[in-house]
Image (cartoon, rainbow, N blue to C red; front, side, top):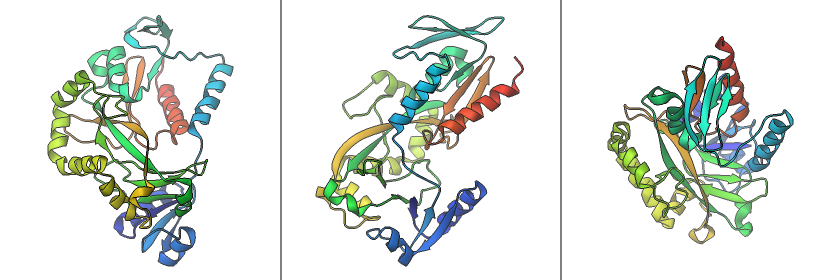
Length: 309
């Protein structure tokens, strides 16, 4: 179960969207909210009934086993160099040797734009660039995990495709708190000390990022402050669960989000696909991409079926 805490018009809009997509919800008042989550502060919440938590590493292992059982192969540690169309398909040159196929789909996350351009040239990604944002998490000790029973989210800001600081109880009963959203200094910048100057030069040279930064610098400063100050991070969490104390929060592994930005400086807040010849590129797969992975796969199959090759 997921609780989106808040009772304004944005909650009503979320409720409308859930209904349009066949997701069961109920709007809770303060009393019913306390019954489900006794330690949460709020006058109302949208209770999303069709939700859950899984061990996604185990999901990936299961998917990999199905792929291999179907006779396909998985290559790890393999970099895409280039692509070239032939009369019967497309040859992708990689560090592990060439791969030839009738159709090619790329879905490379943090490297989505680079791989798309490697395979299809400048047309591959168009005017989109992937910018990496690190999401930093904290974790509650086992002695304080009783403060969170389900998944607790603030009502999201519609101007940003970020979820805001929230609390998630995992399959192992551990409670993670976060994330914030700060600019990563490398595509795989899971830590502050991981810096890729080539990536940074490319990011700051991109006019779309500069437009985004000018329009949203206050948001960026707030996120940076929460990254550097546990006190500010705690204050944000206490808006949802006031009983959480600063000393309850211990650092947990961070994640890095691949966020596509257009030349106009706008964050792409939906899935972005681009077909170039025999290649189909997935350029943006925003949260919850892992949760929606099977549906994304179905959408890819549907798009491939539309092309007569």
